[in-house]
Image (spheres, helix red, strand yellow):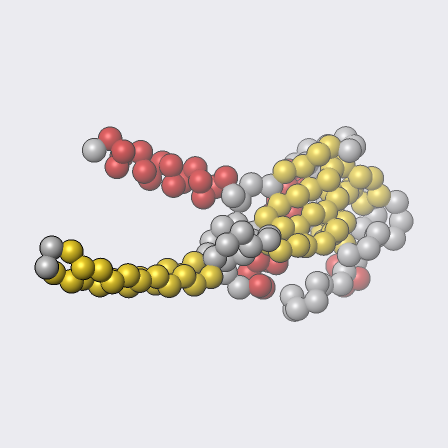
Length: 157
């Protein structure tokens, strides 16, 4: 009975553990800002900028659809950068997680025992989505260009 009480807590821990972002400081963090103020750059921004941290994140264990995965990692990069006071992320790219199994399995069996025969069959399907990983560099841009100068990722319009 006690195991049933711990199950929801264990599930919550497992689900949130796969959604974590991480960073390695390479500069001096600033006061946190609103994630909406963080811009994603696909190349070095014009002018001077200061590197604050290297960022890594993943889309999460239950994120389906390629566009949803990209949106998820970009949002997480923005939030992690904002927590360090960075107003930009120099986007480094994405990668898909390698599959370590999955697919469809079919099994069956027929046997005879004690004068009675029996048969069974089973099908197993793994439909868990493949996670997307992303990395970037949290930066502080002294004079950010106007918002219109930003280029969106291909397929994110």
